[in-house]
Image (tube, one colour):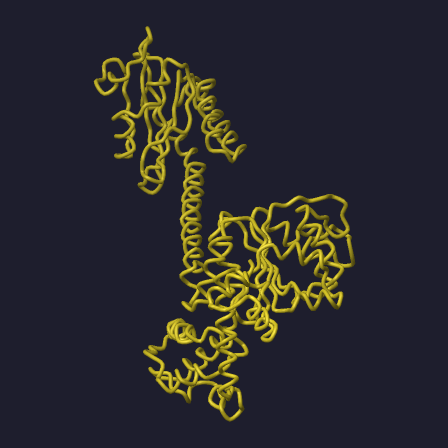
Length: 506
């Protein structure tokens, strides 16, 4: 039968193990938990010092916790061949007298008394997750096998928190890698090289975007529906210093007037019927990033006032709240509407217009950049061929002629829809009969303009004047010199053809 002393020792060890389990369950911080375990071993199991190493994502031993005197710290915290052997073999090592073991002479302990060492692996399914090392005062009669079994039980207790830490570390690394991949994908997807078009009109747009992208300037994108204003806004954001921050889209025409303030600025609990909790608005969510306000011309007058304050002060209050919230955001707005006409009819605030109209970029309609039609059509053919798993090789010449003759009231968006429609119908080549009926009946429906010679000359003259004004950024005198004519004649032609010179001054 076991002696009373043996039973007492077993009870003491059980008590220590219970303390260790409690310490490990008290904190989610691995270092704090492991340090607490070493303190318990020092106070209750009479070790002189201890250290715990864990194996990191690269498979290297890394110190996680140490407890003991400073003179023993180098001995237990510097990785030596003994610790490495325990990790690699997943087997414990006992050194009864440290001073007599050659493996430890590289890091001697400056101490009068002799020390004993025991190191045990923390193992899960034959995979080493860490190493527990302890130093005892040397006693010739010490029962090392008994001490080893106890420390192996202690290492088993460490298994769960170390394993959880490893899982969290692996997940964090996966998320970081995924985040880097997604950011790179966003930058590639919304880079300038993905905006299709090499016409001089689009080159002007690229130049303006590249100049303003890295600034925090408010940008107003103007152009007809379907010209790609949202794509330009994305290019502005993902080529700016805010590219790692949120990009929040808001279609001002899609949200009911009764809800738009709540969507913009958020609301407090009980602000209105159905407000069961506090909600952050789009501007608060976009803090440090960019807000894209599409169809800004359709914004309700009551919301225009609050948006004006946001643009001026970068602050607002939630609906039903009194707290002033400050945000650091960049505003990019877009509209197809004639804002000047809306101002004259008192539907759009003039002061808001001037706040938004800091840097204006006009996106030309597709009919004014015919040279880009074929490039865009080929791009959409490849895109939807891959998406729908159809090996479409080319667009036939009659189909190209049909695309070039059409006037594209829906701009790039309409062209994209037409090509997707054709890809779904064709086999390997897009023919004219695969295009939508609106394109096939273009001539019969008079969508192709039939111009007289004088009208054609006027259109050519207008285009030349516009090109000169773009080159000189709206300077009439310089444009006149470029065209070898007088400023008076240029002024007359501008008035005759109703050319808006303001669009060239940005």
